[in-house]
Image: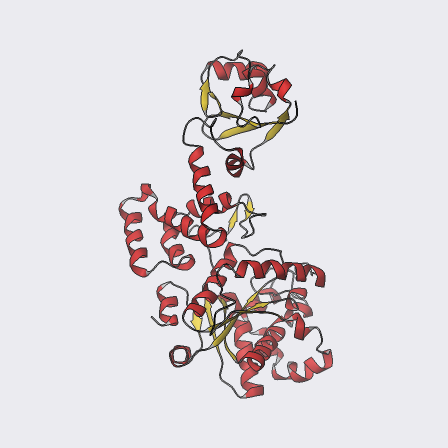
Amino acid sequence: MQLIDELMWRGLVSEQTEGLRETLTRERVTAYIGFDPTAASLHVGSLLTMLNLARLQRAGHSPIGLVGGGTGLIGDPSGKSQERNLLTFEQVEVNAQGIRRQLERVLDFDAPSNPAKLVNNVDWLRPVGFLDFLRDVGKHFTVNYMLAKESVKRRVGGEEGISFTEFSYQLLQAYDYLVLHDRFGCTLQMGGSDQWGNITAGCELIRRVRGSKVHGLVWPLMTTSSGAKFGKTEAGTIWLDPALTSPYRFYQFWLNTDDRDVVAYLGYFTWLDRATIDDLARTVSEKPEAREAQRRLAGEVTTMVHGADELTRAERASALLFGGSLKKARVDDLMMVLEDVPSTTMTQTTLVTSTVANAAFAAGLASSKGEAGRLIKQGGVYLNGERVTDDRRLLTIDDTIEGRLVIFQKGQRERRLVRIEGE
């Protein structure tokens, strides 16, 4: 299947320049996508961009990941309602290294015929002189042309307005395309639909100064069926770096995908073929309660980003909370699940001289020792997954998990941890 056809059936083509299909059919092209280095990690929204660059490579074309080390110092107004904080060169460099590690999960930088490349536009933007840039790039664009771009129009008409710094971003991105065209023969730039104005500005610059026809392709911006921004949760952004978002939370993010979104996400974020996705779509329609499509989505994406071992741990951790007693569970697995649960610390000596009610109160499960006692007598408290009914029973070291942890639970979701530290 041709690349353009695969992207289309996956719902990943919003706009494309005229003649792109024929070019991709006839030639092996070099294409690039830009990555914004405003953080040390990419997030799940960036995963779509990463995968589309990887799809291009698997189709035999040559991919370039462009870290916006120079433009990241300026800020892209596309999709933004206000100016963002500017980064230092040192911050950009650290963030660029993190992006490289994450791109290596899906791109092949050692492929024999079309290895992926990673470049940083600070290498050519920082040395260029202001007067040279105005003469060689700025003269090819009218202010009217720049104001007509949708990303600029939204900002000009808003309360915050737009600074000259961000207004000139599209010229810098156009120059990026020209440099990559000259150095690597790049003839295709891809990105989200909010980048269409910047991409076509690059196509226009190359046409004017090199007389060459180059192309652009964009896909729809990601939102959920409820209208929320994709990748945002109550707990914050879902990052690809496991130090920022644990593999368990990452797995749960995909597992909790709405039935209305899951089939589209299987097309966007996995390598599954059309027949397999169609089969999973039928399960969503016929047996939505089984959530087979969500489990497959979560498994595929977690394996791709974090590896098979982390998927196994995430699945094992997910099963812990629904498997009765937790006494034989591993603390490390439990902490994947319970990392955000409120906790307190207690010495081993204090623990073994405490009643269940006193420990539950100390953990914050009840507002008083009396309330803790009443809850326990009513059968509403669980200790390490097992119901307790004797509020005066003294705890022992056998009531801990690996001698390190005690978990109290009230109802279906409310939990408190007691961490055992010291004698």
